[in-house]
Picture 1 (tube, rainbow, N blue to C red):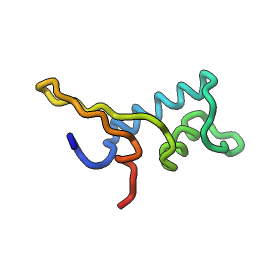
Picture 2 (picture 1 turned 45 degrees about the vertical axis):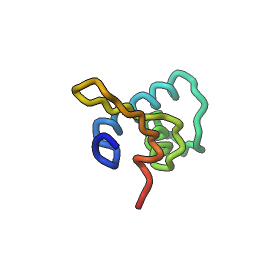
Picture 3 (picture 1 turned 135 degrees about the vertical axis):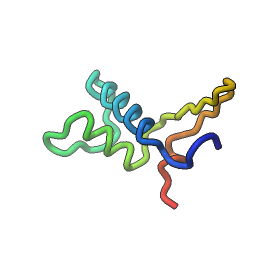
Picture 4 (picture 1 turned 45 degrees about the horizontal axis):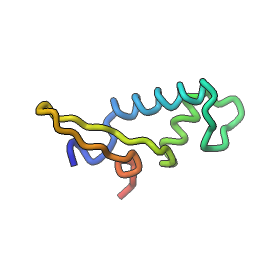
Length: 77
């Protein structure tokens, strides 16, 4: 696997931001939101539970890359 075995803080910020934008534009929510929860709170909850069907693409300087499902990077050992 390219890179660290867990999500970096930059990857986490990108995922949460992208998902929050999707939610704010009307995408279906995958968890039951708490009262008054913002799109960012909902996105964080979805990421913590591990139900987001997204992948991270990690690229090396030589152009090679690896697509890694978020689920693999958020699993607790």
